[in-house]
Length: 178
Image 1: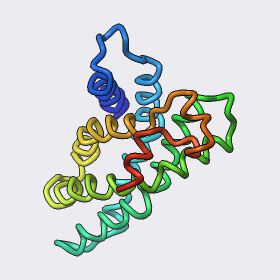
Image 2 (image 1 turned 90 degrees about the vertical axis):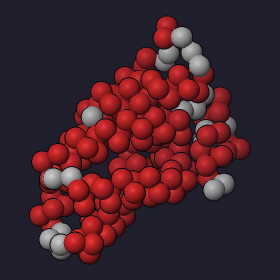
Image 3 (image 1 turned 45 degrees about the vertical axis):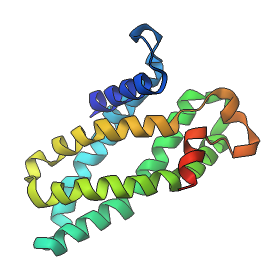
């Protein structure tokens, strides 16, 4: 999962800035890699294994219940923690309150996009993909989602410190208007 999220960040940087490989922010990609390896991957593994044990409905009711549980119980705190993680590692001098404010500002706009993307992905995940392959299937989808999260979570130090926008990067402000 870490490799796919880190790669998604590199792709995001390539699209955002159309940079040469030597101009990439490799620390940013390393933060994304570490998030996937230490947090997102292990959490997803245990979540998806437990989800099938907890929700035993079959057919469309089971699929809807699993998607609802995933998107309403698992995703919001994980997304919030992602933004705290990225902000804390990018701007350690700003302190915990700035990290939490950044995460709070970016959460809802990101969740709106998340719900559209992951709800569609999870129809396939829960309807067609056997349990033993779900983490791998979701990890591949995380490549694209990681690029998007990287896009939303990126802010320059001056933008982050700006009180006018609550520390929210311009990408998140654009998405918030949706």
